[in-house]
Image (cartoon, rainbow, N blue to C red; front, side):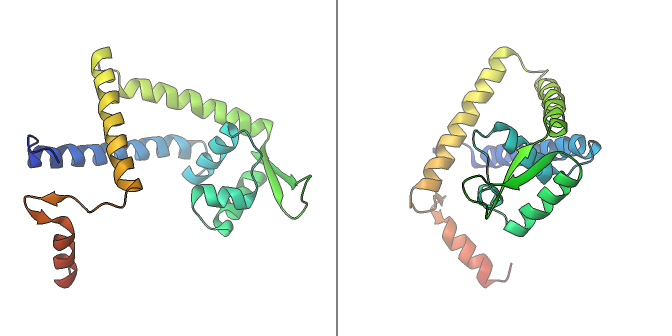
Length: 175
């Protein structure tokens, strides 16, 4: 962390960012729930819509980092509701390929429209310059997090105390 940054302000920014992220998920989850599907089912539909290939259940489980059983349950409900269809893969009949039905495509179009309107409303009080500045800040955060994720580096030190030492102390104290 840069020495010029006030640690309390950084903490406040982080807390606000995380709180807004959770609120965003709740608001959009409410929109999805009103459509009669779960968030995970909606994410599956959006993924099927945006992908160039026809994924198998196994590929979807890997993509969403969930069990094959969880994907199977979601797909079963989506198929029962008429949003997707499953059929044996042409190249390998041992697995199913999943595709959106017309009803599924209509739901995706509907949610895209709802979410676009909600996104615009969320940024309605921003000036164009503020929006560009916000995007720049988010891109910087993404770059920093990606570097920390990809590199096998030490956890940063905070006021001379290594964060790992704090965590070890917390675990030792049972907190």
